[in-house]
Image 1 (cartoon, rainbow, N blue to C red):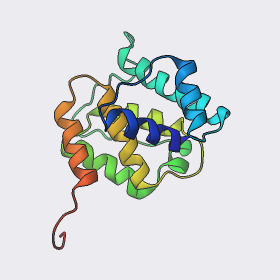
Image 2: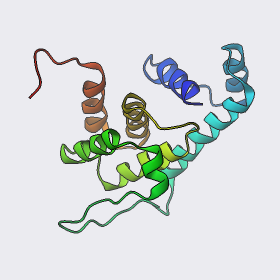
Image 3: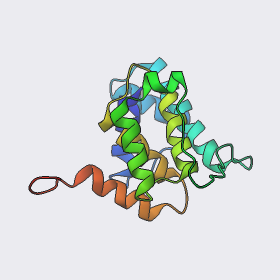
Length: 157
């Protein structure tokens, strides 16, 4: 399923090609690209749920953070998101790429992906997809793009 999400993101978002909104047409295109129909269905539902999260009047992830508070991961989340990835999410919050709400949206979308433990690189792409779909996060989106695509010169300390 993640491969389909990456294919759609790279094909439509990164290349500025207009996304087909007709579900049947998009399903046909993905089938022609070699993806299985059950995985296509899951990926399209994942995308629809992401859109629902950012368009919802309920704002299920509107978080009021108090000074000194921190996010505690439940046991299911700990199974899916390793220590390195949890540290990266914290880092993104500290540099204001993610806020509490977008962090929760990222965690929600990670938990809906099939498969085992998510790699750090895969998590970065999920963050990028979430930021792309949430209005008003252009700066955070571009900063995240820089974190993914720019290779630092020299040693990091």
